[in-house]
Image (cartoon, rainbow, N blue to C red; front, side, top):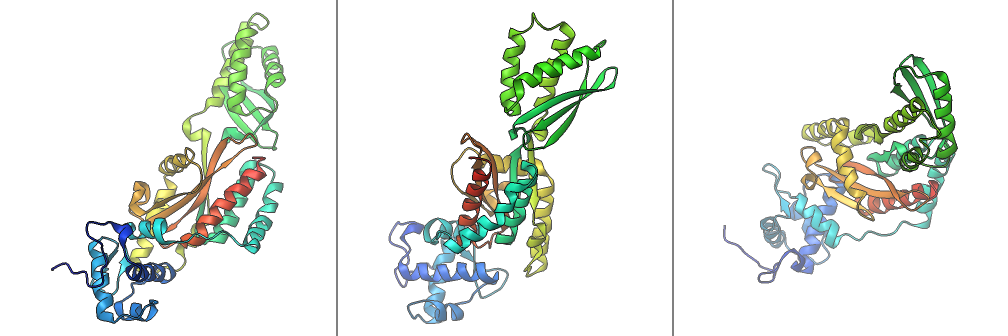
Length: 362
């Protein structure tokens, strides 16, 4: 089919940014209709929606050019058009106006998250924050956090068997974590007591990561004061805190049910099932969210821009949050269909991340 440009859609050798105002208006209407209904929109309806009157035939010509640019496509044999992932990305980056939240919306989010600060542990608080965020955005809410972020209050060694002990870590936030430790042969109870006292005198108020660095130095400097078995208990205790990547990172997901709302076709259901499977395989989600920890502000992944969710046709909007020292310690956000209400969800995620940072003293 010959290329046509009846209303000056594309300037010579120009890219997407050179769409004229009328073409942008038609494209914006296609995207906004999709975000609102999930349905393709045809030229007849578009001719009624756009600001400057155009005949359905002229609208079809513009749609044809938008299609050649890869911004829209025709699903099946439908006369209507839907935005492609490239089109959605162009809309989000170039056309969409992300308004700030109103005072009423900010107040609502603050009120909903206020109770979160009274939760007994950071994990419980984050879970509660996600439940509220999921309700606000009508999508699944996710958070990636490090188990080692809470500050330590107390440690205790409890012997289970002659060569096994339970390490009980108590955080300042009340969170308790237990890890089983293999003891060197012949460790007396006095060595466990001495190791407990040595560690407790140095860990209070520190995160696990900070405590590890402190204790490795202290252990080197205090070797003469500690007998060898006590040194081995302390070294084994410190090593047990390293855990593995899967232990150090935890993923919390809330609001799966929101993804089942407003499904339009069997293929929508299949995509949501695929997304559920992706969320179950937490390793990939952790890797994805981890990328946002290296960047400031909100990150947006649309469809196959993120290989993990490419099959489920999902979008991810995430923002990092910080602790009291201003260090980024986790990421929170939402995962939902590509027809998320981006203009509303982006500032909501951004503000929620700031509230959580404030909650953690950041």
